Structure formats: structure tokens, C-alpha cells
Image 1 (cartoon, one colour):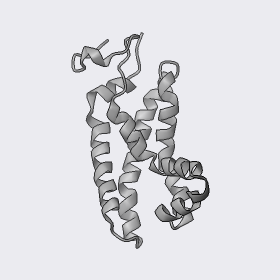
Image 2 (cartoon, helix red, strand yellow; image 1 turned 90 degrees about the horizontal axis):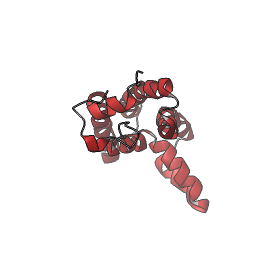
Image 3 (cartoon, helix red, strand yellow; image 1 turned 120 degrees about the vertical axis):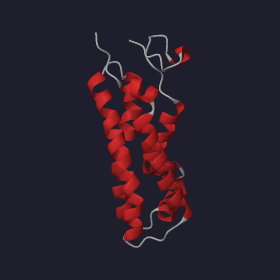
Length: 149
């Protein structure tokens, strides 16, 4: 059943709600360490320098990959969401949980002694906005709803 809160142009040819553009932005925000990892791998000789610039502590880099796993999984499953409806609907809650973890991650790093920077503050603000959007956007909620036959 289609919701009246969603514009008819937001549906694809199969009658499913299209994923919003901001969904992809939130996935990039959550998988920011994964994106850095791919960019560092693609920039042959300067990959180690790039990783050291953003993550001087290698343990923080490996720990930073963990909250991005649901975002990577959502990206990989997005094309087949109709074939794995239970996993797909559970992914919304995993993304919300990962966003909560990321929201508290940066303040914990500050508390442990990492310097307070503009980039860190911007990430916390972006994490707050992303969490609020994940929780309240009706179109996104409809994208993750299981279809009942």
C-alpha cells in the first residue's frame, strides 16, 4: 500500500519507494573510514601518508571501520532489497545504531585526549543531523518497510 505522504514521482517502475539522495550521503558519512581506506588504496604511493594524516593511531583506524560496516552492507544490499526484505528492514535499525555509535565516538575521543578541531565538531553536527533524519524521514521509513502480501 502506498503512502500519501510520498510523492508519486518517488516510486520506481516496480512500485517501490526510491531511496532518497540523502540516504546515500548518510551512508558516506557513516562509512567515512571505509571511504578513506579505498582512497588510500587507490592513491598508490601516498596511501600510507594519507592514512597517517587522518589516523595517526593505527588502532583508531581499525576501530573506525567497525561503525561503517552497516553502511557498507546497506550499500551492497540496496540493489536487491526486494529479494532480502527481512535483512533490508533490519538494516534501518542497524544504521540508526551505527549512527548513535558515531555520534558518541568523537566526544569520547576528545575525552581521551584528542584535540578539539573544527573537523571533529563538524562531524558531530553532521552525525546529529543524520541521526535525526534516519529517525524521522517518512520516505526513508517507507523504503525500509516490509511489503505485506
